[in-house]
Image 1 (cartoon, rainbow, N blue to C red):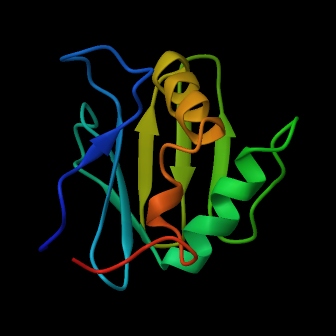
Image 2 (image 1 turned 90 degrees about the vertical axis):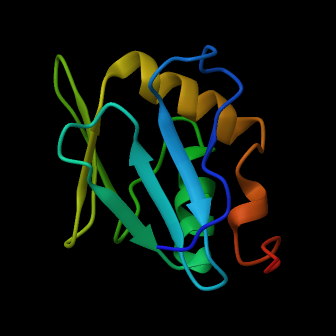
Length: 114
C-alpha cells in the first residue's frame, strides 16, 4: 500500500504504540501500531472528515460507517471491512490529537496529493 508517512498524535509519547493515520490520494488509513492483527481501517477522505467532526463534539457523536466501541480494557474502531483495537490511553491520545486538528490535513477539505 503506497502511503505517505504514518502519523500519530503528538499526545502519544515518543516510541509508544499509538493509533497511526496515513493517506493515499483517494484513501485514509488508520491502524494501531501494537494491534497484533495488523488491521488497517480504510476510508475516503470525506468519510474520515465526518469521523473527525463527530469525534470533536462533546460527547463524541456516532458516525454512520466508522463505529467506536468501548469495553473496560479496549477501544475498537471498526467498519464492515476492518477492526482496529487499541486501549483507552492510546484512544485518548488520538482524541486529543483530533481535537487539536492534528489529522485535519487528511480530510477531503485539506488533503492534497503529493
